[in-house]
Length: 247
Ligand code: NAP
Image (tube, rainbow, N blue to C red; front, side, top):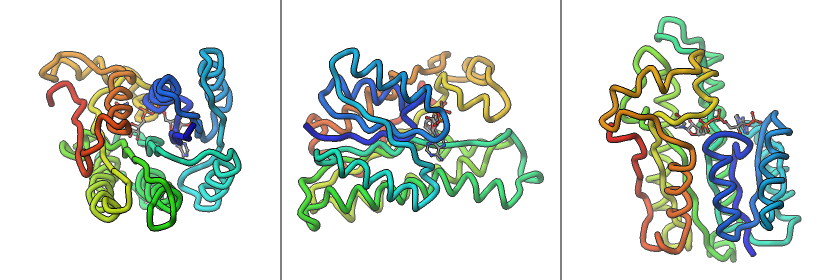
């Protein structure tokens, strides 16, 4: 057995990914920030179906908490084989005139620093250089990194641009050490994240502008993540899968 850590696994895309990884046979480390009830529900769903999972609370933007999370994963006694860097935030829709330094730094702390910290700790455990057994990392970016999210959250889009650079650079850095690093770029997916931007119904408002004329489901993103982590993608690194309905 091997462990897959999914950050932000209590809800949305992370939740769907955790459920599918458990079916694939991973022991799933279900990271969450505040919502212990949602995390507990995910674990119950996995264990009821005969899988293995445990909860790890940590704010990924806080280095001390990230270190404690990886320590608790180490104590499970199984190797860490997969990391899904998924936990991400966006703030209220706004043009640049109203973006404060505090808000920009908050978005970058979770969406960029948090991803870096989790990658760093995963590499220390997976890399052949550190006597690890290898592994795979998927960074959940966004189509916003290409499209820029004008008038809504350019700060968020920029954070996802940084995630894409992290994916490219780290993939090259660790390719010879048994670790594959890839990215997914979802578009409009039905999750709670749009409510934190101030518009819970955003997907339905803008879906007609998409070539496929519909929003996506978290499970559709999860399937791509699970494939990238699997042996079926054994020669794939530094790659990105667009999950944006054609946009
Ligand atoms: P969501 O439904 O809002 O869920 C966010 C998850 O992240 C929750 O599990 C939350 O935990 C966790 N989280 C938030 N901040 C955290 C922190 N500092 N430390 C640890 N966990 C934290 O979001 P989602 O839509 O599934 O988004 C998942 C990823 O997909 C994000 O990176 C997002 O940018 C990306 N994405 C989403 C869409 C979309 O349309 N939904 C499109 C493109 C990209 P709690 O439950 O404890 O709060």
